[in-house]
Length: 162
Image 1 (cartoon, rainbow, N blue to C red):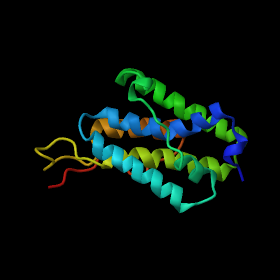
Image 2 (image 1 turned 30 degrees about the vertical axis):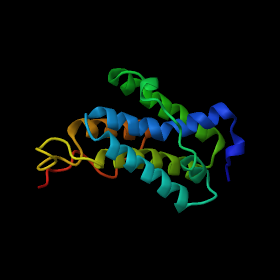
Image 3 (image 1 turned 45 degrees about the vertical axis):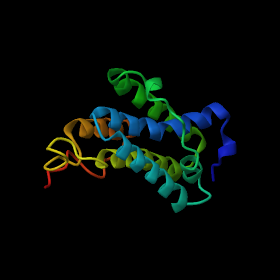
Image 4 (image 1 turned 90 degrees about the horizontal axis):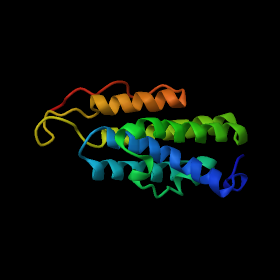
């Protein structure tokens, strides 16, 4: 089993930043809801940390990064830099971790992003009639899933609900 000790400080930071970068890509895709989205991301980290104690994923989830949104650049730069951060982390993990640990990490990155997208409704009026996942958020999720080489668990923008 792969552990935190198998990575130097720079590598560990790279692993920690990938799920957060995925979340930021989704959060930045649509205006509004940042607080709810951030709370949803935190909840996903907490859930992952408690679901499989002693695993590499739990260690990563227990040590979320402090990322300055500006560090990843403008919205346009984020669509390039975010996938780079994610790809670098996955490549690193593939050299040091077992295939099941890599798969769990990929799913965690996508789950964090999906929970951020689902945290608030977009459109509508005062949240009524909005979509759970906007088209922009869906496009960001598609990009993240493509970068990870996995399928989304929720596909496409969610329908509007009252």
